[in-house]
Length: 504
Image (cartoon, rainbow, N blue to C red):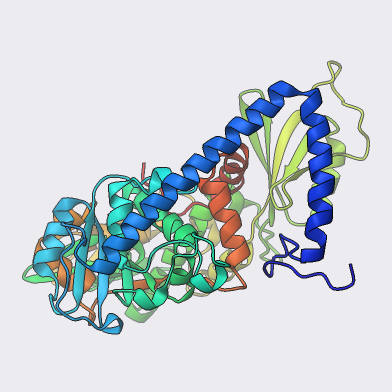
């Protein structure tokens, strides 16, 4: 074919008209021959074609009904609290999880330009459901009608077909803001909403019209002061600041008192180290054991961890380089070693099992990318008199934390480096009321507006979709939200150790 033409950039369909007849003729002859030989399979295929045709017709009628309602303006969802402004570029639609939070949002909003659409329960998964099925869903219908631009491909890409019903010029709101709870159910609903927008209103996402609200996770009250906090990192910073206000730290090894400036630097380093230590633990390592393998001369820490399972027992082995890993692997001929980086097993050079019954132990190789950052922090702490050997809990006090001055001074013996941060956080929590928000409904109208809806204070995440990430996004939605279980299970197994926010 001298001049091939394709339907889109991904080149999934050849559209040269001169090829049509040739392909149809060859396909027709081949199918007729096969169907004559296999009547039961032919009947099953025809039944499936008829079912799909009926579903398409039902979806077309549902789309037409929704489109007519959106165009007339008289069919707006009853639970939509619309705004008074009619210029889409000045308005925003909040899609809010739950009637309770929706009610608070309606009371607290700025009625001039903020519209509220509460949705109840978990949405239908449009990745799995047929179009005629999800278009019957009341929440989906409400969103399509409220947004007003239809669904499917843009008209200019539809080739005159019925599915080309999305018209961004008819958009009723300039920003579509997803606002869900901070718990696992809220994350699920947010994912279902993003799946719907990605699959059915792709151009809306590409145009940068979709946002995710960031409601606070904590409310902190101290005396008459009140503050809202977005995440655990910010909460810890506040508590550390409060806990370090009136304390002094003494190193009992040399009886020297650490200055306030040094203590501030130490606490910042310990906070970073605590996060990095959690990463090592997620990989399956014990942090104190990991530190014990530090090279005393070079200060280098292991960069590889091998977890070997033998029945119900599991052992950890630490290595400083790939050469040491290879040597260990070749010395253990009965070990099948799975490399988590490349996602496949590394077999030893000799494939002869060392065990008489031919069985093999299984091992998991993990590269510890955190090693360099941990080495740097340990070096900084050492310069301030905190030795790596003091990370493990000692039988006798290593440090003394003195709280207050004069007769009111209170001494706290500390038996390890992590104990410094733990005690400071404990002191910082005194007199502080910390409330964790699990749902938007726990906030009243004023709180919800001030923390999540006020343009001067709120935080929004913009959903970005472009040519560079569209293919990856499509793959991710297919794996995580689709019908096929095995790729999703594999994705979870491969990424389980990297999870950061787990609500169980």
